[in-house]
Image (cartoon, rainbow, N blue to C red; front, side, top):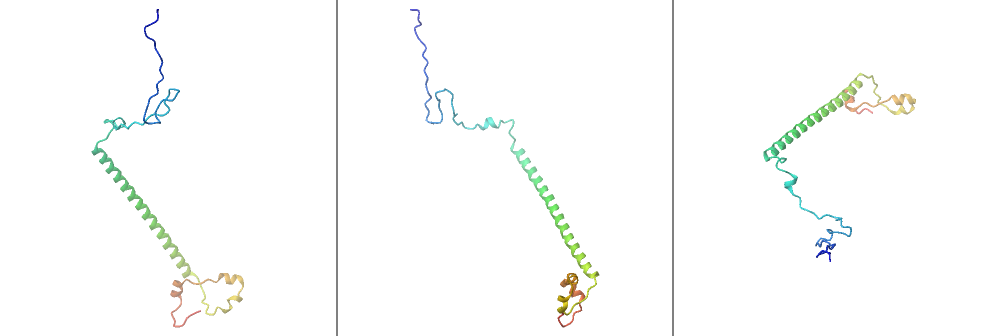
Length: 144
């Protein structure tokens, strides 16, 4: 009778829960943890948090920076527009000057053009209306 007055019995109890996804399987390791509420105090301790004035100052700085960036962007776009317009104007002037310096012959009757050789027909070009008005004297009759 040397046995102790009580004996230890191993009892394998499962945790009863209303949530079916939370519990203990046979292995004894939980396969899914229950959701817990996020604690904002732990995520943002007071030492890390910024004051309202600091947040507003950063917001103003960001707004000013964006305004300056947009202003510089608009200046760049305006410069590009001006350069494009200058290029177009220069091309027009060059074309007009080219027409002014060329010698041409006014053809009143176009009947015989079909009989010309191919090279001559390729050289034949029409004057633009703006140059035609400047060069041809204004008479009452139509010229074609």
